[in-house]
Image 1 (cartoon, one colour):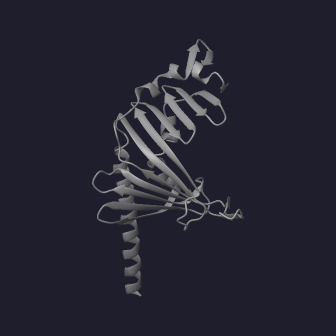
Image 2 (cartoon, one colour):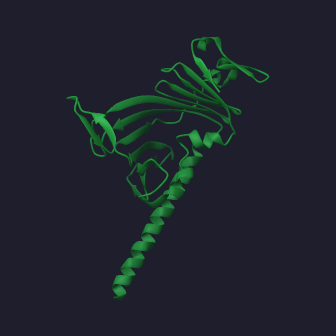
Image 3 (tube, one colour):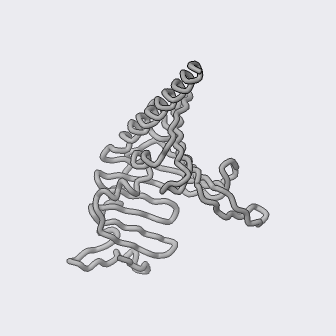
Length: 230
């Protein structure tokens, strides 16, 4: 009986250490993305199931930070935060959306901000190889996140994130190579390239997108055939 209790307490203490290690690793990795200026290239690969190795869709993405401003492009959509002006440009829809926001919105839309998600996870664990920490986070069955598990691979030398894997908790339809419609739980992998400092300053000039005069907002001429939504 005492042996059983001892084993239980040992396992409990180990799970606590793993959780603390996962939090500490993510906190240290987070510091890599809190510098004033950087660029980050990413690849988004979606898969129709948790286990398949066949990519369903792929997109290139780039994230640039310039002090408190941010530029993020994935596929044909751009999101720009300059001061308190937030722009979303959907090129496939020829749409420019403009909103006034608070500076804290950067934390909400930045795909490299993991710490804000930690309270949603009920189980955290770490595995490591010679080169990376693999931090795995599990949610409860009922939660506010769209996925049930998140894996974050962190480089042990640079503490930059190399990959994220999200396991979604809702079934989605997909089409097979033969045209058959199926449903399953998809996953998303985000490959992160090493951080760079090649930031395009022109992306952070508001007049390159819109012009403001008093309460009037107009679109830059290069977006003349786009619709402005406020």
